[in-house]
Amino acid sequence: MRAFWGFVRKEFYHIFRDKRTLMILFGMPVVQLLLFGYAIRNELTSADLAVWDQSNDVVTRELTGKLFASGTFKLAAVIHSEDEIEDLFRKGIARQVVVFGPDFANRRARGTAEILMITDASDPNMAQVLQGATQSILSDARPTMNVSVRMLYNPQLKSANLFVPGLIALILMLVSALMTSISITREKELGTMETLLASPLSPVDIILGKVIPYLILSLVNVCSVLFIARFVFDVPFIGSITLFFVEAFLFTLTALALGIVISTKAKTQQVAMMVALAGLLLPTILLSGLIYPVDNMPAPLYALSHMVPARWFLDIVRGIMLKGNGIAELWPQTLILVGMTVALITVSLKNLNIRLD
Amino acid sequence: MNVIEVNGLSKHFGSFKAVDDITFDVKKGEIFGFLGANGAGKTTAMRMLTGLLVATSGNATVAGYDVNREPERVKARIGYMSQKFSLYEDLTVAENVTLFGGIYGLSDEQIREKLLEMEPASLKSLVGSLPLGWKQKVSFATAMLHDPAIVFLDEPTGGVDPITRRQFWNRLYEEADRGVTLFVTTHYMDEAEYCDRIAMMVDGRIAAIGTPAELKSNLNAASMDEVFVKLARGGVRS
Image 1 (tube, each protein chain N blue to C red):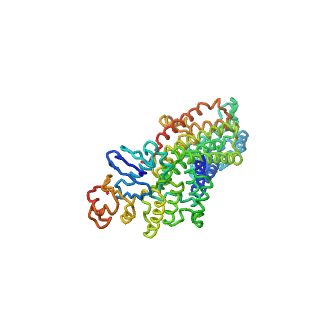
Image 2 (image 1 turned 45 degrees about the vertical axis):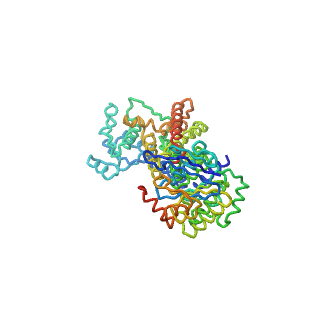
Image 3 (image 1 turned 135 degrees about the vertical axis):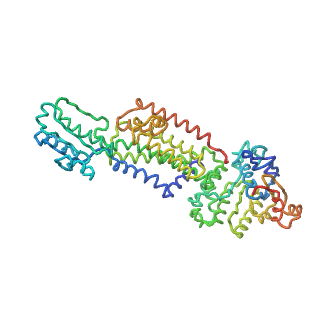
């Protein structure tokens, strides 16, 4: 046991003496969180909107006032002819133009008032969001219907609420799988693995000793990400924190097992890094639902996404943080992760060459 | 008394016979040299004896234990110094010694004693900053920490200048005088002269075995270099 903990301590020396490792371990999560949190935003704030009011009566003026009162839109231009519209879009002055038809107030009473929304759809997602926002504000213009809208679990539709859980998955994958596979293959490359294997340490001791420091550091990282999310981005945390850490621990084990599987196959650090980046990080970003909703994927990718551990973990984290779900709702995802972890650990133990080849 | 007994040991990788049916003994306190060109099978043979590789066929006992059936017992009783002086370069000398002392089951007290025996100036330096000759000395001291009866050294003097090499061999003689058995692979023919007995490997087989004097007189050669050239002429690998 003493030999084992000495070995774990040695792994911490490696980590804390290598600036690059430290950067990846502690710098990257914070940078990523800030990037995702500030740069990637789907929510609207002061989008440029132009108005062409052909009636200019009491009702249209009131509606225009409403459009800009929310802070969602900012008045980019007031125009008076159709010719000006294209110019606005080309020069990037406005992203959307709202046109009120002639004789608006009178026609409204008869139910034939017309509003035209023209939107710059060169960014299709943004165009949808813009139209949706405009429509909901203008829905007052149709007195025949009274539609009320309620957004649950993320009422302000904040992007950070969506990204932070995904980011936790990404960081755990990065630290656990990438870093362990690199650190194990490094010992192979430097020849120290040979010395270790020739010693009385068993291969399982060696692997555990290499993995435990990263397990601890992963959980430290989760704490710091949660802290930033809570106090910088105001992301809510409704569910049980204990359940959250149990699930995070489970997902870390999955990622570590993946890292071990990679390092039993890869002979050099470069190979390990390429495999981890292409084989783990990309699917975690693209196929887990972190950025693109899983349900919108074409059938083959949708099928593939079931094999990405982060997809299930993301369901769990969003469930706990935003909806306050407990194990009663989350047991299927948890069970899938447990199954994946057991399978991966079995594979890695089988591949773990007790002797060199 | 024999501390290493090897009988018909072979290692095949697919159809390639890296080590092909070798048989020999090593006595206690002997410096036994394993010579041959690169690719002759020296390292593979040593890895089987240290429990790092499983033999395809044949058997061997080291320190009284069968290497195929009880590799863990063998590992606890031998010292091993691999080709690359495999210490951790980002750890200090003292940290390396403490790590390997712990792995080989030394108590804190024993580790402290070992550290006192070493050059005090070097203890706090990172191994990576030491000159090659020093690394090699520290590496050997680390392999000797648990007082093993047998030490395996895989090309221990690679890349080191002749004077440092000579000093290193003096260290090996001291250990041999204390009764430690040393099993050394090398491809420096001058080092072969320093060994008590040598086995010359060609294409995975032992082409000749004996004291340096015996080999020279049997093959009618003036130096070990000549012995090697005469024996290796039949080889196809390398």
